[in-house]
Image (cartoon, rainbow, N blue to C red):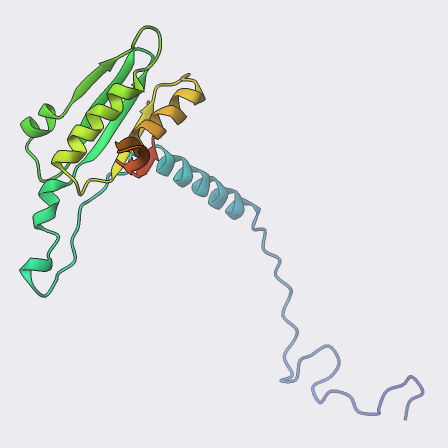
Length: 187
């Protein structure tokens, strides 16, 4: 017995070896800095590329058991409205896959300023007329011009979402296009 605290048993293969008698493997230290730089740059590029794309809505339906319950017939009655907000007024355009270009162009409107302010009442009136023809429609995309005041954007959202209808002595809010998406122009 040695007095150094050993149990008296040494490894069968000798000191500095593993349990199989092999010499220890040298430690490998990987330098992952370059790899992390590449991955972070790739992530940044993908995020920037995604932000620069315009996402289009694709109309789709789910198969149903009977034709009476199908939404396919209702697709003809649904449009997505696009309202471009400019310093000179509004430009209203319709988007839809079930329409010809002539039908979509017939729904387009220019709404100029009234005096020096945007004409929100005329915008609501035009959107209301389109909603009456296509009652299943519920989405409007707002595209504000760069440098537009925030108040104009909010008032445009309000004008597109609902209007006030008078029933007897009461005034109630009636929905127009409740789903409002704010988009930007890609330069």
